[in-house]
Length: 543
View 1 (cartoon, rainbow, N blue to C red):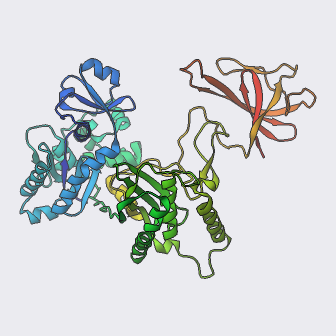
View 2: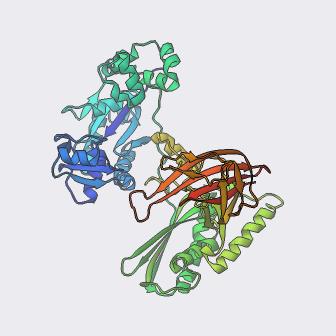
View 3: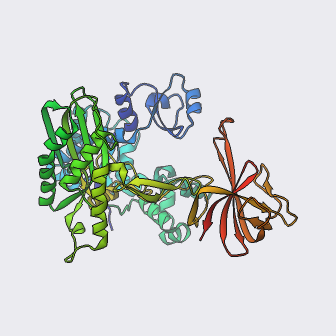
């Protein structure tokens, strides 16, 4: 299958440009954008003095004196690029956002409208120049990968067009790192392959057999047969409601009463579009210019009374009694951050049974006692079982939430999924928890003691077992007592561990070390034990 003609518009060093503008700096200064202590992006002036992506901050500063290091803010970078995306969509539909600073389009439409690929590229660059970016570049080629390489190729030409059918020849001389596949690049380098052309010359069947499906995809891209298509993003459709108060209101009951009709209209408009809101953002603005913003989740979907309750809770600042506002409120803005098809939330013909009654009961109690008055249990992040026990307000997310992209407001679940696919984003989805260093491996215990119990763990000779600084047991567990007494010692039939955990090791005053061990007694009960300050404690039990 022949790759389709594709156009890529690229703004060089966009993270630096957007971050510098946010801090009132010029992008031609010596700037490095830092993420987790490493250089994420740097300006041309910094590169001229040896700064490179991936360097540690200290090394970058040693190479470039006077380097301005700025923290990475992905939301800020994405938000700053949104006007350029909107400008491209005004000129040509079906724009795919590859990443902040880079967009892709199918060349067929712009070529017909502007009577050629070069006039279309020139029109895009002129529009970007009007918005303040004068060094943007456009690459046109067969396939997404070749077009991106054409846009990023160094040189004075801002527009680089690869003729139809010439993408394999254009890519042949490029180095392997253009694939951005570090492991594959290292293997190919050891095999004596230095360029994309050398890689493309290998038989496709042999590449698939040796490197698997990822290697086959990279081989297709290197040969100019990139099968990926331009998948346009779904433009955000923000659904919101704004209430203005003149004069500003000082009392919470006045504000909630005034927005009740607006909340009804907000929910009715969503219902007319066959949508329901499952995540609501409330913006409160006072006459002093102060802004309070909070995102609220719902276990089902927001009704008008639910919207009014969230505004009241936000005004109370989490308290269950009416609090005094710092200044009168003159503006309340409601935004449907996440919407879903209403058909997915319809009740059955005979109702939804006990679960629906439980939800209404808890929501009613919550509306009386406040947002944090009704809590539900969930498993959160942490190392010890007790740290992972979390209580969250009813209706809030039970899983850690990923940060949204700047253009994600107001879209349905399906629309956001299509948009993620269009941008080629991958990563940890909601509900997937990262592994904490020193955390207990699965399975987790079922009973976690609210107050841990002091116990005994001894060898066959009755010597209390300890653990040395290297994490090795000083003796083999032979007997175990579920109390601090020697009277109820019972045999240990199996054990596993230990798992050492050191917290705040850099601070001698607050440093803490805990070593955990799993044991099974003669009755078949499994226990999770912890050694701290040479004393054994029972933290949990596996029922």
